[in-house]
Structure formats: structure tokens, C-alpha cells
Image (tube, chains in turn purple, yellow):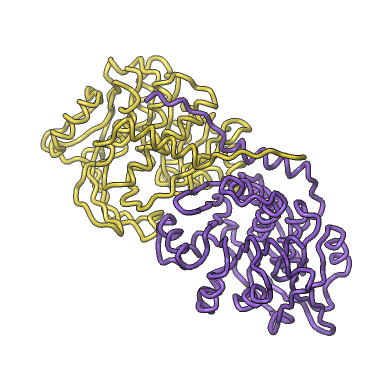
Length: 308
Length: 308
């Protein structure tokens, strides 16, 4: 298996200024694996669900090459459930309910077929779970990407610090980069975070785009100004899935290719915002993705002849 | 006179996490005219000061080709004074003092030598003052750019609406674009604002860059992640000065050239943040500007071969 993704597969109840949806399918690994499936024929999913999770969604994921040997199904138990409400500005949200359910005592087990993976995406989860997956791999993958959030910085900083030493790419938002590093300047934050383990930092800024830092280089990926952001849930995970899926499909880890992967991830994330839950990722075509990537590129295209 | 700029010439007291400066030279037209002076040999300044304003600064501006026939000097009166304190995030600030002084009853008078100007920059000021300048011009300039802020949207919405019908380009920040249009989506906000007069909208987003909207086209200019933002005061005005200065020097009002002007304006604004007040604009060289513009361009440069 070239690519393995770890994260939640869950239910979300979401309220945005555009409406409300109860118990739609969600979870970081759902968005990651769906986004990546447009770039890799097959990937391996490590997660846990209860037997309340819809069979047809699992079949749809299977059809998209998302292997489920690493997905534990606990009978008589409930899947992880999150309910949240977005503010008018869509950049902030309140968590209303977090029911860990099956996630409370999740111990991931890496199937044999996943153990030689070249690309590992550690979606947002308890750092100890992310670490457990890393430790089960006999050979270090070519690229390990980790997504996390302020919750783990606040509550399990030591475990987070430990898993950070095992990864290549960290994706967090700007507030989190500042919190993790204690530096306001993102340039300084990146430099500090590089001393913690990651060689590459991606700062996700939602409607303001994303920044890619590597050594002294920086790349600024725009966000597409959208008519309507219907539901930003999963946009960050979709970004990560597009990013690692593109890298896994091209097998090129140069900075130039990372830049392309950030654009592809941003394009995928823009689709995720157009409908509630992962709906838009289910009916998306490769042609639409190419067209969107083109839009992203033309968004910043400019030529200047300098006189000086 | 090819380019005329209107706005405050004033004193600022500024406190940021990097320090404090009392009564440094400031004002929208100061930043605008200094930034534009790197691109046009001569421009005309319309403003008002008291006799407390430093003579050496006026001489320095004169050396840079900033004509002062339109600058009223009121003897025995004080220049406009603003004091503010930036929060740790540098994106928000509190106004501590606003002493209008000479600005309270400012009636701009457009010197004859300015009346045939092709480019007019209306810096942030009471809309009635901006309007008075427009009305004194016998021929409409080729391009009128207006900068304003939420204060005028709150307090003089009718005068603002009137002057908006007379301009080509509006520059405001994202919050203000949302307030003015009543639309959260910036795409929709731009469309609404186009019905109010402006044909072009530039949304300044500080550390998140800038968006240029024209008809159905949009361009996203990045902001350079800086090691330290020492003082963002005047960054928006410096942007506007670089933008209109570049346009006036190239005399090309195509969308492609507007994109270039936004990059140039962004580069100029990044310099303004490096030191307190307009200090950095005084010792800046053309070579530094070219180098910075190059950095801005490489910040978003990416090439993707689409397979699909």
C-alpha cells in the first residue's frame, strides 16, 4: 500500500449560516481518504467506527480504492460524533457536542499490507494514537505528514512533542503555529517548529490561503474567493488528503512539487466548502479538479518587467 | 501634474509590541506621496498642516518631487494628531487620541497646476473633502482611486455613497468591504460595490495579502511573511501610493497592469512595516524595491502540468 491514512471516521452535526445537517458522515480520515482517492488508486485506512456507520458509505469508499483492513468496526458501539455551529464569518465555530464513543479507547493496529507504505498521513487525532501507528511500521515511510490542533497542544503537549520528532510535514493553522512556537511572526514560528522535528511546515489560513515553509524558502498559495462557503467542515483534512495524494501519485518530494501539492490540496479544500459534509467530494470529477487547479494558478499569475 | 494625492499630513504616536514612538510624522498623504515618489518624478500634494510640522520633512518631500502648492500651512495652528496602540497580533489597534486640529475645517483648494491631473489618489479623509477635490477638477482624471474606512461608513454614509459614484478604484480592507456591501462573501461584496460606482475593488488584507476584483476577474496578491512587523501604520496608504504611482508611471490601465500595480503596492507596504512611521520609505532605494517585487513574484510562482 503506497499511502496510508489515519484519523477519525465519524458523524458530524453541522450548523452554518446556510443551513443545518444532522449526523452527516464526517471525520478527518474520511475527508483525507476521499480527497486522496482522486490521485492514488488505492490507499489504506486506519480508524475505528461503531456498527451505526452507514454501510453504503463504506462501499462507496471501497469503490474509490479506500482499503478498509485497518478500519475496526465495533459491534454494539457508536461512532465518534461531533456537533458544531459556525459563526457568520465561517472562520470561527463553537463545538456543541463531542461524543468520543469508540474513539475513547482506540488502539490502532496496522495491517501487514500497510506496513511497507511510502506515504503516511496522520490526521488530527490524539498524538498517542498517531505515535502508535508510526511505531508499528518496521520501515520509516518516505514521507510522514501530521495534522493536529490546539486541543492537543493544550492537553497532551508532551505526546505531541514526541510524535513531532517522527514526522516530515506538519499542517496546522496560523493561530496554532503561533501557539506551538510562541512566536507571532510566522517566519520565526516556522524556524522554531523546524527544531521540533518537522522539516516542512504548512500553515493553513482558510479563506486567506496557505503558506509552505521549508528551510529558508516560503511559498504562498492563495485561496479561491468563493461565492458561498456553505460548510468549511473537513476543508483542512481535504487539503491534507489532496496534498499527500498528489505527492504519492507523483513520487517527487522536491520543494517545487510540494508547491504543486499545496495548490492541489487548496483546490480540493475549496470543493469541500461548497456543500455540507463530504458530499461534494463524492460527485467530483477529475476534469473539475483540473479546471479548479487552473483557476488557482491564474489567481496569482502576473508578469512584471523590472526596469531597474 | 500627472498625479495628485489628497489626504492627511500629520503626527502619529504609535505603540507596538516592538516599542513606542511619540509624534513621528504620519498621515495618509505622507505615505501615499512618498511611496508614489519612487515611480513618478513629480506629484501634487493636497493637504493641510499647522506650523508645528517639521520643515526638514517638507524639504525632504520636496526633494522627492512632492509639490506642495496644494499644501495649506496654517500659522499658529496644530497639525492633525493621532495616537494608537497595536495589539500583539498587529492586525488590530486601539485609537487612543484623535486631535483633528487643522483638519476640523479643512477646505481643500486645487491649485491650477494640478487641475489637469491624469491620476488622482483620494486618501482616507472625510468623503466631503474628497468630493470637494473631485468637483474642483474641470476634467475627470483618467483614474481616480479612493481609500476610506469604516469610520466614514458609520458616520457619513451618504457623503461616502456620493463620492463613490465619482471614482474608479476603491481600496478598503475585508471587514470594510463586508460592512459596505452587507455581503460576507467577498465575491458578492465586490459585485455589490461595483453597483455603487467603483469599477475596481481592492481588498487589503494586511498580512494575508490583497485581492483585486474587476468585473468577473479576481487576482490574489500575497503578502510577504516578514521576520518582524515593527509598525504597520501607513501600510495601506503606502500600498495605495505604490499602486497609483506605478499606474501613473506606466500609463496602462489594463487588468494585467493593475495586477502588477497591486504587487508593487504590496511590496511598498511591506517596507513600510519594517520601521516606525515612514522612516523606511525615506532611505529606500529603487534596487531594493525591484528585489522585493521579485520576492513577491517568486512567493506564488508555481508550474503544474495537468495530466487530465
